[in-house]
Image (cartoon, rainbow, N blue to C red; front, side, top):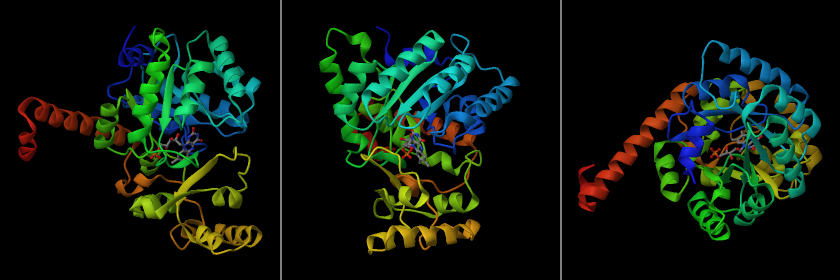
Length: 365
Ligand SMILES: Cc1cc2nc3c(=O)[nH]c(=O)nc-3n(C[C@H](O)[C@H](O)[C@H](O)COP(=O)(O)O)c2cc1C
């Protein structure tokens, strides 16, 4: 059976290793971000809204942006991926678009129940003749086992609890989650090794150190969300991006909560998910006992302040992961992708020196 890395190289021939994907951040990661990441040798994902009626426009834009820059693909696919929120997206409409635009990957996340993912997986495979590979993002060992048994995804994105944006309320960090997912799946799939999905790590990774660590844990690549919020290609306001650059020490200064969903009216997420964001006045007030109606009223007022509404004493939401403190400057998606890849190779070379010259070599590095 081909190794995970060989499978990635075959399915995404334009990619330069180690594989770095940009997360399909809903209505933030659109055509420009996805295309720039793919052009830089990563795998860029568009983040569809739960309402997929606007999706065709993003596909068209991506196709246009890719016209002047040929990337080698497999099976005549579009060299980007598309991420769906399965709790809300319209399956027949999405399948029509997948058939028409043939993205290299379809990423599924947050269904109400596993049977929904089975339908999405089967219909996508049928619509594109298996050309569009299936990525499923999970957050626990149990979810990994269920996704593999029911859907046999090509790629499993293992999301640790540090991740920015939505994730499971109860989760583990990637450093313990990924190896346990790997070992559990390897044991379950003994004799059926071909069904082992490629593992991609996400949550708390922002630079080459995190990517090298993920490779050590058993991942074939990584997905970065929070880091790409610093790229001008991400569709966020200046106030949001400034807050990403400003915020640090994400453990105490971010939180996974449903407070921000309540304020923003995005309350259809399955109850097991919360959104990780930088702690601000809205959250502090909610914890101090302020009712939802008053908090929503103040949120609406704050919207009028524009970019000034972000920040620890502001009320606009800054979805970001605990890794936010490692994101310290604005950089293009291309620069981020290339820099993280080069850093990873440098870290791996240092590790190689330690492995070959002995641990005392650490004092020379
Ligand atoms: C602002 C933001 C929005 C996100 N939106 C989505 C989404 O719509 N769908 C999805 O599958 N994941 C979404 N994610 C989660 C990512 O897929 C990924 O798990 C996460 O960004 C990885 O952790 P990191 O932020 O520490 O890099 C989002 C993440 C962020 C930061």
